[in-house]
Image (cartoon, rainbow, N blue to C red; front, side, top):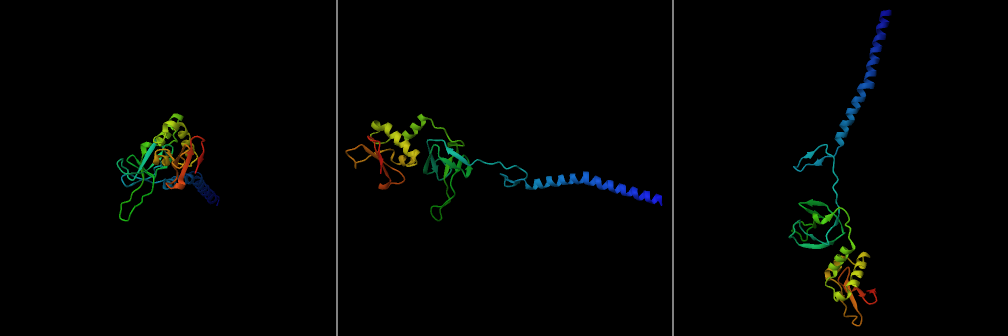
Length: 222
């Protein structure tokens, strides 16, 4: 009887040791392996240039926010320097690049002018963009403003006044560089012949879009 009791106690001890070994050694190892497996499943999958996918590769965030780094940058309707410039951007203008292709950045969605025509979009040269807002010195700013108004009437006489008021109107968002670029500067008004008054169109080409500048008094009026 004592032998049977001793054998039973021995078997219980061996079983308890086995359970302890599993709980304290084997199970933690299994849990760690399971966690590693789950992490592998959750890793992002990146598109492979060859058309396949690359498992377990960490996604790299691509910058899409840029600034124009040229005095005047043509926006074209195709990623081609010979394509038609549909409009212009100016130094410091923010740009969101949706796609990059062979040195060009697409800054608009695709659209069709007429039914049956191919899809087109707006593109700019990437080498004319900067990831940082460009710093413009006083001398460069004057050079830029001068390029907007270099065909103004009586420019030699009122150059400094034209530069000052042009910069003011652009800074206050009353006019854009493109407004000045359209007329190439200030135009002498024949409406006020007894005064030295000049005008520019801002925001349109109607008479209500005219902004007048009296160079003698410094007055701006509409």
